[in-house]
Image 1 (cartoon, helix red, strand yellow):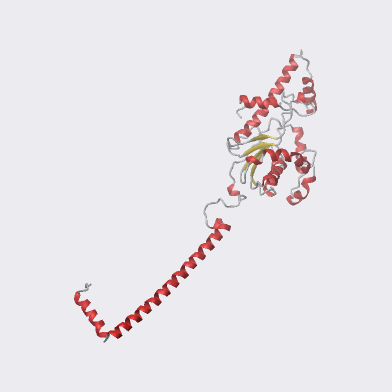
Image 2: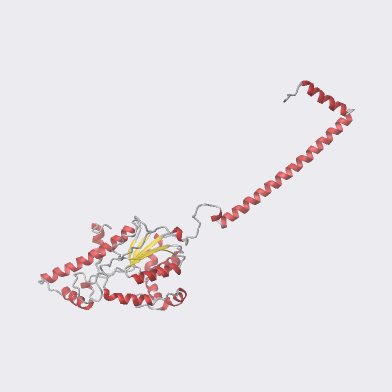
Length: 351
């Protein structure tokens, strides 16, 4: 049973206090002792509170320091994780199981591409020691010579559009040396690193070599995304609006746009004769126009795929292109500068 205190209880308590101390001096002395004890207790409590505060401040400092250097331990966000973590590649897609033959593929060149690919060793340590001075990728020049020639052009057109962690795609990346060179130059000129690199190449052995190079020894902390064998004019397996910059080192022309089906030399003999048609040779002029129209269409579809997979408003870059065959019979054929301007202005290929 709970009993509430009454007035009698209060009186009894007071009486006990008075009875315990017989005179006022003893009562005052007791009061002073109690006051002194209370002051000591207060000082002890204050010291204890100060120690707790100091400990809390030290703990906060330690946590802040660790969070600065080891942010992954204190945040579920992955924004500070290494950009080389494969799980974080920004664009994902599957390479095609069946490789469609590209319209510009000439079987007579396949052996040459295979031989070029074999020039790059599968030993990546050896590759890094030797590739700069060797003649690769059918350039007829060493990597360093080509890099010297391309340095100004690349450094003046690429860096302003890219930052660390962006994604780039090279159409027709060959064995990967142009991708390698682009990463190096971007790092040297503007310190851009951690780019995710993607590409395609219609020669399967070349695509496999580019994949190996970018997987193992990509410079500037480059992270390989996806590199597939595939036709540059039909990148159906690559998502649209995906990349921060899309480029190609060279658009390989259609070698036999009229489908004569002869050997490479025989075909070019025929195209040379067509180029030399007299003004009154309407058949020759018509064939020449048909051949150029087919070449124009090939270039247009190739660039259209580059534009499709690029994010809206970002650059789509063609580094090198050949002129029409009749304007440069020493080359393989291509398109004119006027064609680029007219195609863009008229939106002929939905760029």
